[in-house]
Length: 83
Image 1 (spheres, rainbow, N blue to C red):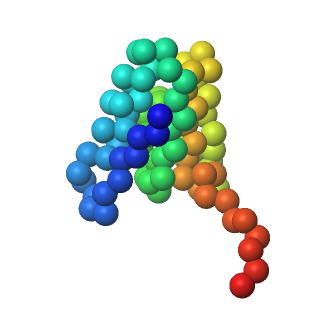
Image 2: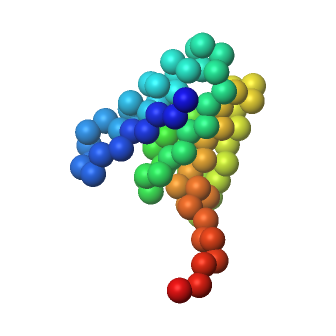
């Protein structure tokens, strides 16, 4: 299952919703990949107990391997296409 929390406006609860949905899936013993596409990396900070991701992005595995959080810059990789 894929769940996206997307909205063009800031401050509408995207991060809070994503964190809460992640918690529900984890409580049901589902493996979760949370991609934090926000440059503020608040989801990453939440699950890493306040740690800021390294410049360029970072991957965090926690919850006994059930949760992987990827910060924005690591999730966006150039594919090397020529114009």
